[in-house]
Image (cartoon, rainbow, N blue to C red; front, side):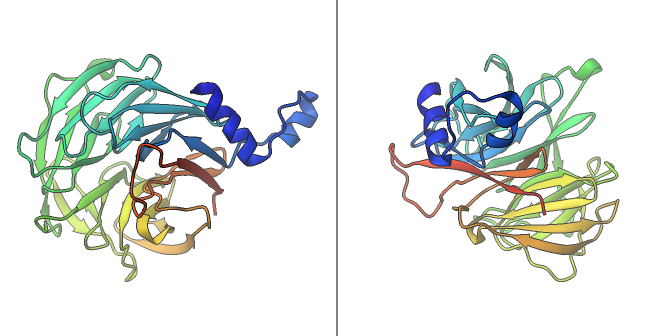
Length: 309
């Protein structure tokens, strides 16, 4: 699989595999701007850490796939645990925090070995969809698209993982609509004192007090983020992926995350219902979930990158 997918990436991009001198190679072989994911993979989440490695989760079976961004070559390095792998993030300890979707769970995976180091059962009933996760200095927070709640996994000394989690009810401006996806992507505000969540069904972004769960609507100057999915905050910039619109909305944020001003919207003909976004070396990387394409075991999937606006 590793060699097959790597070779396909090279062919698709027209990259020569002939060895070149280092200086020439640096110019002739930039990082691939598109690379394949396994057939039938049903990707949704992406995480990129300090190294040029991207991690993807499968909605089909929960497998985790990692790609060397320098080459586009990848491999399944962690087999699914029986539930989906949806949103995911990686921390400085090379731990992947994975949202388990309709399984109502989350897990922590060693990004080097693929071993599951901790699992959490957040919701026991069927009306759940643990959708995304953000990592802060002291905890990981998971959204549930079917419940007005965040799940907090608090870190102990030296980042140790607890035996259990805490459920934080959402109150204030956030109002749950039963039977549809509500809270989806999650990120930290620029001042790192609060959280941001996008509510997919309303197109709103909410600022959340991580201690109390109290929410206030973020003033986006009247912008409605229809199909809002993954969030990324870098510095004072907020990126919001609008999946079925094949768009990334870019906002300049206030430090406390209470308001934002639309800067631009990014589209690309290669977008095929991207769900979320991560960044590396001046580029944005997005997995194409292809929600509008009927999935089969042979359906093709990929990820693409675009320059940061």
